[in-house]
Amino acid sequence: MRLIILCLAALVLLIQFPLWLGKGGWLRVWDLDQQVIAAQKKNDELKARNAKLNSEVQDLKEGTGAVEERARYELGMIKENEVFVQVLDPNKKSSFVSIPPPVPEPKEKR
Image (cartoon, rainbow, N blue to C red; front, side, top):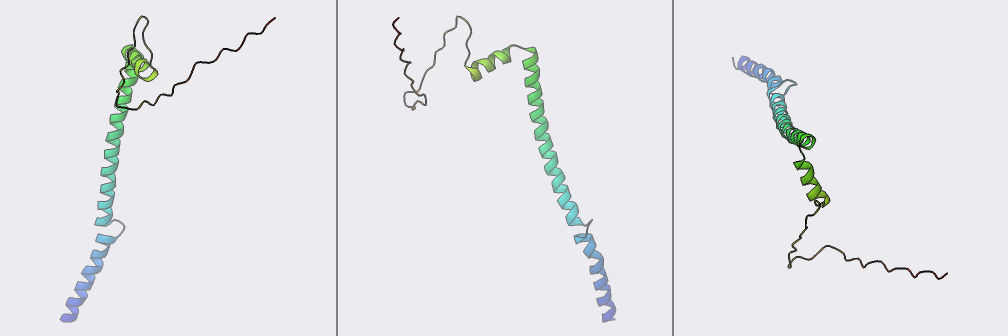
């Protein structure tokens, strides 16, 4: 009787092995599920980024406000008859390099 119980226990273990550790086992399914969740999260982030870029493109195509804003902040442009005032922090070290004006070359005598 003891031999039959041991044989049945061994068969149950042999049957359980592919269920847990086999090609289509629970561990593999759990791992694939985690990969799907990570891919969905990344897709959601990329969709949000694409929506933001799409709205920015539409704004640049249709409106002049976004173009003007980009020209002001990224290119430092100002409108005609507009005064540009820049306030510098006295405690912060300036990263600008002062370049002296060019020295005029002497004129040739004829």
